[in-house]
Image (cartoon, rainbow over all chains, first blue to last red; front, side, top):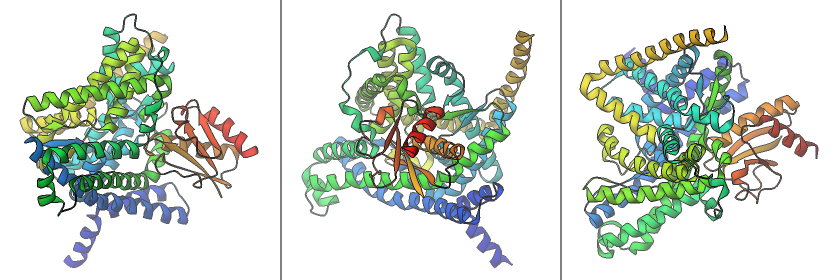
Length: 453
Length: 91
């Protein structure tokens, strides 16, 4: 009997199997045909295995980077990249990640259903990455079992609703309607950029009246931008560490520049693998989530990925990337001067978060708002990860970490609250936040009713 | 089965949303038995991957090598998408 039980436990504790079962159940509930069920279940499972397999590739190329950085600059350097850090964590935290993601999406549906915050967070890769980060932080602080899944899912569900909610006033202004929300976990940066624009933007003209060169648009191809940055970074770090050090301790005699070039390209290769894995995992989950939300949550607002706002200010996209990146470089030197861990500015987070911040800053405060708002983002996403590292447990010593604003803020919040008032206290606090949201919804409904009457 | 593929920078978020809209449009047009939708990134896409490609205005230059390319002024506007897909299918 114990033997059979062990087989079942072994089976279910494989995250890939668990994801397969979640997708399978979802498809059965939707009464899909057998061929679709087989195809989609297998693809989701393979996708999960691709992500774990790619972890080896990414870690293999990041480790020498860390060693060279330490040798060259006598300080640790961290490259924020969601894909890399999730792949590293998925082996150990995969089961908790899959469960927190599933129940987190259910929590999102529940919160949207019972409160006035009708946001359905449809940016699936961010849901997956955040579920993973929550799993790492709560498990590292000692939470287990049902308590872990309940608290993690509630935290994820709240974040999926609150992040779009704080941006909606700006989205209404930008899009001219209230039908679409922004679902991207750089939310706090975008809100700050929006407020900065309000404060500094008086009389500033829109970025769209400027002439901005389009030549950096090739960076939108994430493989191009990642390999380009990595080649530059690895070369600088290899030069700092010195030819002799690299060739004797790391490359086994291969020329140090060629070795670094290959490691940089290997990182980009791992990145492609992980993205493909994520795409396979999400292929059925996101449409099912959207379908269910349409049925269960009347008047729901889809919260969508950040490029949906790019057409509202195309010049701001370019301006924002550059200004945010400069903010990142300035912060990097500041961190070094303070003797803290160095957060190396990555092109991907500075592009997407910087660009979106600038679109928000431009909407409230023209080009001054766009430039200062995205610069602020660049500083924020350089300093926050430093505070996030200590709560990530054994992942805190990896050479990569989560890159976007809301990840870091939620992570620090979960880690610190648990440290001061314990796991049960954290769960209580999250329930308290939900209760406040329900009360706010109930009272504002009355206000609306009165206004109509 | 012909293929319609949505393309964006990372191939994760925006293109996935557009894919879901394409699927809905194909159902509305009653051609979901002839066309299927998928999504990918700018880095992965090649001209043989699909019969029709869809992308946003901000990526129009980077995706200009793709045949039968539909460029959307708004990624969210299903009516625009429907019109442009209908044009491609009939033309």
